Amino acid sequence: MALSLVWAQTPDGVIGADGTMPWHVPEDLARFRRFTWGHPVLMGRRTWQSLPESVRPLPGRENIVLSSHPGFAAPGATVVASLDDALAAVGDRTGWVIGGGQVYAAALPHADRVETTVVDRGVTGDTFVPVLDERRWTPVAFEPVEGWYTSRAEGTRFRFVSYALRPESSPASDPRLQAPHRVRCDWGRSGVRAVAAGADRLAVVVDVLTFTTTTSAAVAQGVTVAPFRWHDPGAEAFCAEHDAVLARDRTTGGPSLSPASVAGLGRSRLVLPSPNGATTTLTVAATGAQVVAGALRNADAVARYAAAALEADPTLVVALVPAGEGWPDGALRPCAEDLWGAGAIADALVRHGVTDLSEEAAVARATWLAVADDPASHLLAAASGRELVERGWTDDVHVAAQLDADDTAPVLVDGWFEAR
Image (cartoon, rainbow, N blue to C red; front, side):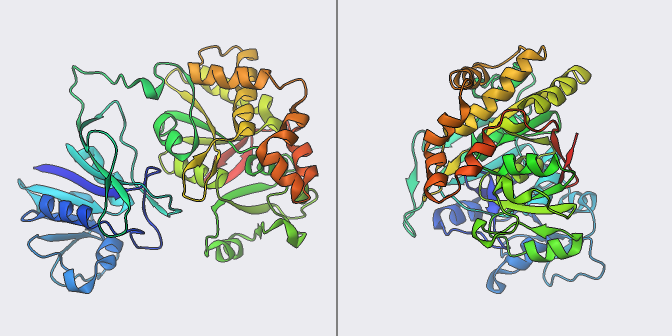
């Protein structure tokens, strides 16, 4: 049996939102049809249900639907209850896995080929592709070799990238992954998927203004914090299910992304949506990595926790991830304060005896040391700080600048940040 995976994704790894593919690129659909025509295609129940009725089952292909729901029916398709049953149905043929995220992740260890379409869109999604471990997978083809195609439908830019299993004689050596250093640093959701993804990684997400600062302040008071995607309509129901309070806009006067708003909360659980820090946290957590919320307020506590973890596990990698913000077109906007936060943690790691920093992590540390004598004035002068000041939230900037004010490391456990 030969098993291949095919998907379209944003640069951040998003493949879906609310059960749909949030773009229309006909060239990708034509490539998908060319690859899968005449072969069995394996998909999960939700992917099957997302197909238009006019092409369900997908014509010219045996459709195999994986579902654990007893009695689930997919007219025209073969329904199986386990991945092993699905692989048995493929037999000695070439099968294609077409979604969704959980099925991709389960099938990836059995695959020898991955075909991707990277769609140059900034999308807040809820379904992500699995991370392709650089020790197992290597890119073998790019189309175009440089740059992007432009879709005739929406003008969306896209490109094709093909992956194959890395030959055993060719060890992973992509310098962008900052190996073999044990402390690495890269930006945003794309960076987190490169240097922080996987069960052997401890990812320190840094969003100083203000997701991780608010998380640190709340956790230091004994509150557990659930990161949540921005404008997710399921937040209210999640709060009701878990007896938690939902953070809202700063102007409401209740708990929000303002760190001062969580003082004396009176509840033990807080659901904290944010467009950058929370989304980056959920992106990397989905890869199996352990996630810690880092900020200036808890730099030393986070460094102590990470240093102990590195000592206990010689295979562990710590990745510092300044979250940054987004421009209106979805592109990453690096923020000085997040680099300073990552650098403060890197500096504390060095003080705790961890010196194997990548050049990128060392740059973050040097950037922090350049402002460490007066972080408040630099935060107030930075673009994000000035934005908060102009909106009347100067106190939030001062709270974020309080180095080591909190002595706990917020660690994500079963979806909630807890004190460590």
